[in-house]
Image (cartoon, rainbow, N blue to C red; front, side, top):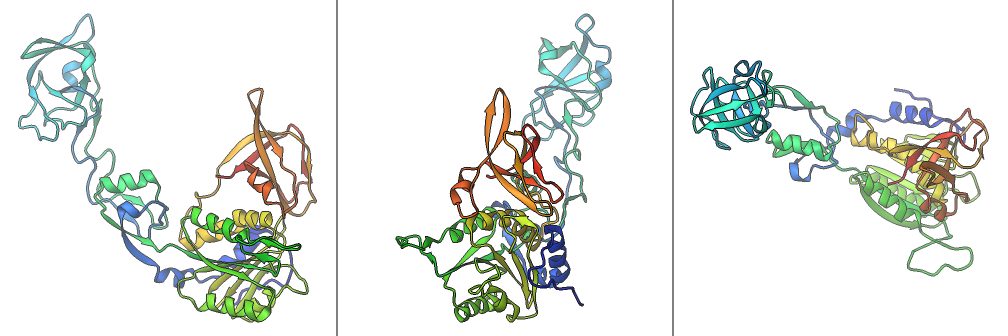
Length: 422
């Protein structure tokens, strides 16, 4: 199958780049050997590799949701404070026990929350609407409808019902539901392993003191944390100098390493004398560079390359640019590679009013970091100014607002959507 590969540094939108990636990548082959069975207790955040179908009704019996008396609803019709209904009390239903009797017309049985209704009962009268006349009779001052205060045997989950589809990412409440079904083990996709490489002669380890012209390696740590946040496993390659042969050796090792699913390369994505990433990726294996250049700021020189069905993403070297591209591009690609059918793992958003005017060049999507503050019971988004090399501007921010491709700016007092950092 032939796919159109983008020429070098042809700027396209995020949506166009993702479309090219999805058309080029062989997901069927990728997922074929990625299933594994794990215990439910370790399943939080994992993506299902199969549909989950219920093999039983839940709760499996008609269950009281209140402390009170199991009754036939028709025996309570018309009951009120002035004209109560009187029923014979024939026993008490103990928790975790199946009632040994059947309820007849005009009868009631004491029941606690969670107790199993006896055969013949179809409702529960709450305790506060009853009085004991004697040890064998109760008075009811309020009527109930059929199945009121009762969880029916298949009302929570029905047998043969599809509970979750393949590709669903499990949340805490989903784990609880699977526990209710007795799913001790489930089939999921393996966790993605994402390699991280920082490039540049100016990059040094964080335990070194920078000399003039040097900076500590920020991106390895920031990207690693972001990868863990997505439920994936970071694979730290380290710092690679501006040397074409050393970079090619490192990327070739990532290509051949069966553990690694995706490689992130920060730095070396621009077109310049020392930027070898493009040349190395283009000869690493077919089809090569899919995308070079995205219509966004920061992050324009982003690279997406597919080599022998192994994905490489070249991120800008500036920390803010790298993290914003991760948030808006890499997250979506990782969700695809995880097998998620719905990308609900993205950032949460909140509405606010913009405190200052912000302007942008039309034709690209721009991300403005903001700090949230409450003023007169109104939430305001305050732009955090700073160049893409300033990691403090990202750490100080609560989130960011997006100026869309066809917008030239946003104005003071305008309602904006803030994408929140966790």
